Length: 157
Image 1 (cartoon, rainbow, N blue to C red):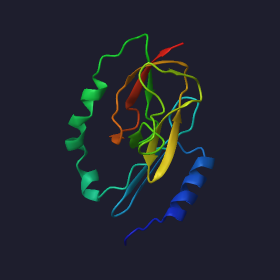
Image 2: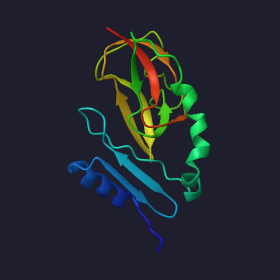
Image 3: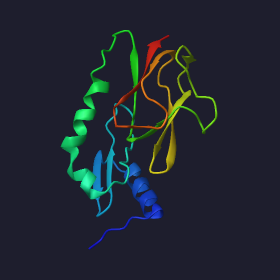
Image 4: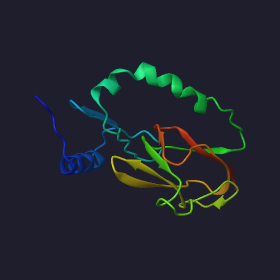
């Protein structure tokens, strides 16, 4: 039996899960996998995994060696990290050709949009949860990111 999931069904599923207290959910079909996790302290976040061929889901060990180098970057105790709350594609600007939301050296405020994470064709604005100065932006525009991956570092105000 082949499982199909259209946009409307996905929207309804996310809505129902958003209203429940389920912390983790996985749905797999012949040509997709959907993981939803809500485990950020004090905040419920859904993290959809981009549709991928089953063959890609079968080989996670081959993909993992590429992940540690960004995480292995030395962290300074005086900086706070802004991490990806979901799997997606990182975008620095609201649209191609437009100015980035932030640059290194900019001051940001709580609630200010710092980037966009695209997940399943949905553009999700990521808002700062801290005020301070942007010290590092670790991702290039259009780069795929993983849940929890460090996107930028901020020196708190």
